[in-house]
Length: 98
Image (cartoon, rainbow, N blue to C red; front, top):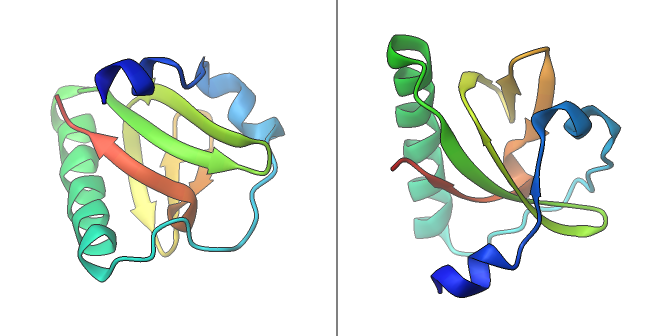
């Protein structure tokens, strides 16, 4: 699985504002959605308290992408990164806290 993850493009957070996101949910398992929510809240706490970066696997209109960054806030159905960059929660596949 790690090898497959490495094949997904790692992008700079600065280009997120130029991406287009469909409104559909990328996960279809309620347990996976709940796990994503819990990990997003943990990542936000780690980011605010310790400036801890996480890896976010998400999907825009063109396909899967990864970004290493700190999450500043989770508000409604959006996560906020530095510079007011936003990723819709429903487009996030996973959040790696390591």
